[in-house]
Each structure stands twice: as structure tokens, then as C-alpha cells.
Length: 118
Image (cartoon, rainbow, N blue to C red; front, side):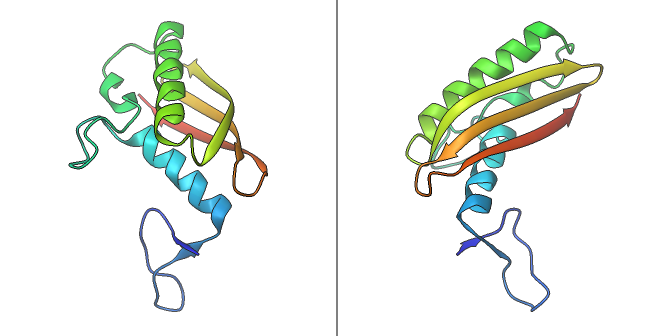
């Protein structure tokens, strides 16, 4: 079992745990919402999404996020997932991110959806 992210206490008063699929989804979420320079031992880890908060939401912003996220997933999580597709959509003041992937350890296909309001 793996610790759930974000860390919290479960109903039994213990550290909450997740299975492999939940852990992989948590890893992808951490990559999406971590800024470069935020982690001391991995200063290049992250997608850069939060650095674009003040950029106007547009198709160009979505394409930039898609490119940097795809590169980040391949760099940091290539031993955990096989990325099938990354789609980023700019919709009014919301940026929607959809990642289709296969968990290498289990062979299961999965999808992670994230939404960020600019």
C-alpha cells in the first residue's frame, strides 16, 4: 500500500493509504500542480502549470501546458506510466487537463482529469 496524497488521517486514525492505481494518479497530480524549484532535491520537477496563472487563457496557453506536461510525464514518470494522450483545453477561465495512461506495473489503462481555474 501507498500513502494517499494529500496526506491525511483515515477513519481508523491511521495514515490514509491507496492502492497502486491511486498512487499513480497521485503522482501525476503532484507533477501537474508542482512548480519547478518547489522541491529541494528535484528542482526541475513539475509541469509549470502554476507559473502560467497570470497568462490569458487561450489555445496557445493550452498548447504550452500540453507540451510541458507531456515532457514532464515522460521525464519524471516514464518508469511508472506509459502516456497514451495528454489533452489540455482552455475553457473560459478554466484550464482542463486530461491524461490517458497505462500503469506499467499492472497493465491497466486509466484516465486522470484535472481542472485549474485561472
